[in-house]
Image (cartoon, rainbow, N blue to C red):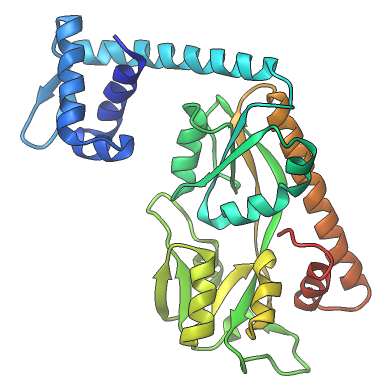
Length: 324
């Protein structure tokens, strides 16, 4: 029996069949089916009732579920222990991000860490939703997960808050607010179509929730997979979009208008990790990211204290440093 067979067995149970489980594991259905059959032959018991549309665990399959999870959890604990035993100066640090906390953003925060610890290889990737990210951290495929704060977490996971993501309204050239009204009420953002980020059914869209709360009914002009694609639609299709501060200086430089709304759309963000003490490299990475973000937020606060609006303060702070 191999660990991968237990992982595949649990995937079939969790997804209710071969199709979605195979897609989740990046396997073909025949390959996954053969692996499950081999596991049944080795254990000398049927693990699933095979119906026309689903695979339903037998009583033996249900008994195997907690045992398989315990084995895989023990493997994760061994991996964590060995990772903690290593020095910060080497190894691989696996980081996952959701689209709302993109890999580009996390990479921009990692400059100090990579300069100080060049022997640590950062493996930064994106998944499609917070649900996928939390699952990846829980089963050990990622050590750190950067995301907006989840509504709730499993008991074996923790969340470290790093700050608050603020979104500004980005419009095509020529759509600046009136000079006497530097902040635009959400209810008055106008009828330009919105370029929205794709949201899975397991996610909540902070933009949609805020607009609905203020009685704003907007037209969706495009639904796209990334923040960069949203900005492209603003510049080339005349749409508007809500984008994080880190993109606003680039948007302004490309000719877009950047507008502060009243109220701002804000969401706390941070890092999901498995419960317990972080490995040295992960602990240092989080500390360095926190320091980078603190410097960025402080620079914005200084410019706002000098009388600049948020959009102008972001642009001014970005002239010295690129973080968020």
